[in-house]
Image (cartoon, rainbow, N blue to C red; front, side, top):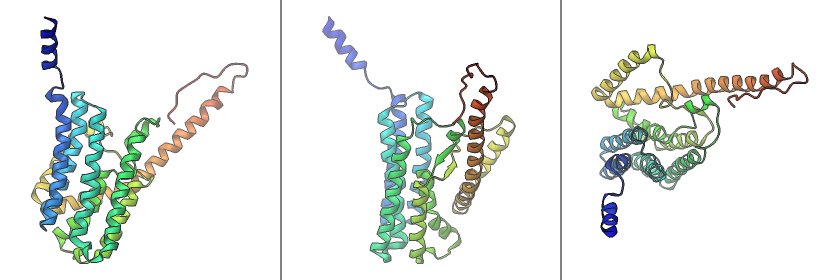
Length: 278
């Protein structure tokens, strides 16, 4: 009888589909990213870029789905990091190399290796800093450009060339320098906005939804023009993020310096301990 109960327990033990769903989405993102490499080898450049962009969409969904279903796991986090490295570190670099930099030979491949190395270092740094104590406002910022955004910026010359035919495909030196610069942005200490953490005030909810609908409609109607504008606007937000981060950091430091000073005004009494950001 006890053996029968043990067998029944083994039969119904395991993970539910809801727990596996975020990992399935991550695997789908990986498949999209690798499919971009396949289309690049066939010189179907627009399909190659589209696959990487789809990988970025699914990468944005898996983490939110995991939190929604309470299915976070260490396995899922490791799988997500490995998928990000392939989809946003390896594949974009190789696609850009095949599109424009083949003529540079070793020098072009050096730019690809540099970009991929910067991506994996950025992901490793992000993983080891997850448990660091940070000021409350710092959770609204990334350190450096995140991997999906870095992949989009690496593909920006291709996207602009699709729409405006600037002839960037015939400017491999510029593309190599651009790819190297994006890699440096990923491993830099520059703060960038983490839009997924930012809270929208109640009065801005409806305008934000309307704006999101307009952006989606624009991407569907004129994808390359719209994506190019979105990436350029993202680049323009980086100086603004640096400025606001420094202002918040300065305010936090001033608050931290003022807290012990207030406690010394009443001699002979122990200062009250307060928790401050930073």
